[in-house]
Length: 146
Image (cartoon, rainbow, N blue to C red; front, side, top):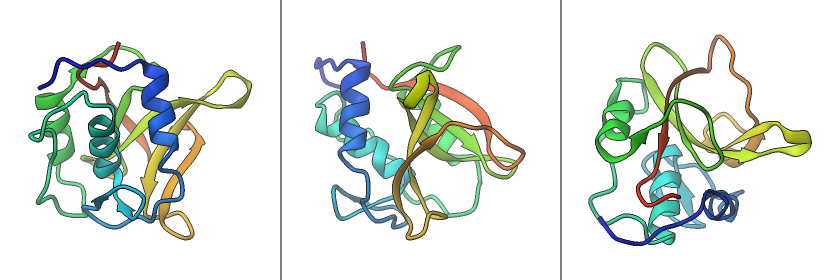
């Protein structure tokens, strides 16, 4: 870990700087290719709040719970949604999708995430809505976020 700190607003600004980056499974190249976990990793690294061990790899595209294990190991679970938080979301039974909470228009929350079902697949920001096929499974604060 590092001793650097970042504000929640800095997390959101950095995440937004990656909007439009093409989605590629296990992508970790800023501006070139990212997946949902890759977005979290490159944002944290760009802010200097994590070391090299802050990453997860070898996961499969289908939900298997790997993302939740990584979140529990490397981030702090928090009780309520907050700006800059990382959300672990289940698209099926197990959490397998991650995104960063932003502040959307008119006071609602947004989700900044690398999305393989966007057309074309890329990093997008959408209004945060939970539905039968997108369920909240955990809320986390990245290390060093104040």
